[in-house]
Amino acid sequence: MEKELAKSRGLELIKRSKIAIVGSLDAHGYPVTKAMFNAKHDGLREVWFSTNTSSKRVGGFRTDRRASVYYVDEDTFEGLLLVETLELLQDEESRRMLWVDGCEKYYPQGVYDPDYTVMKFTAVRGNYYHGLFVIS
Image (tube, rainbow, N blue to C red; front, top):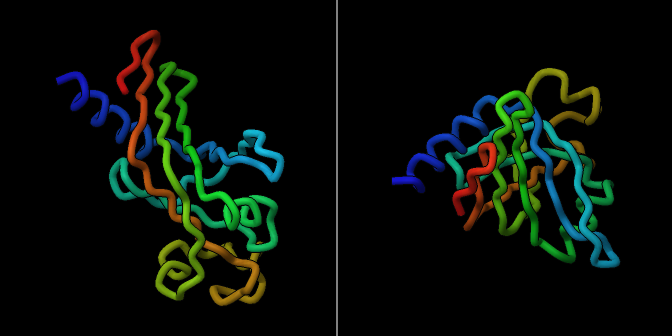
């Protein structure tokens, strides 16, 4: 029962979050994080982001796909940590899926800009936090 409640509350947190914190390991094996727009999700299992192909983050994920995604609501003191791997996508379907008006500000060549990459995170485990309550 507790796990189902945690899944439900975790999904609600994802839905209302504008920002997600993406964690990875840098070239020296140290953990690093970056705030990213919460672009799209499919339940708790899959989350998509977009970023510049030329970024350090993409370079790091080319060598080590391990990742985490963390959502937080500072007003309710809730958090959701998801863990597993991230893959880099540049196929047309993935690019169009996340493209919205205004993206051309960052990717002037449009949906086919070589500096536009979609990142698909797939979770296999997680923890939901609320106050001092943790469900793995």
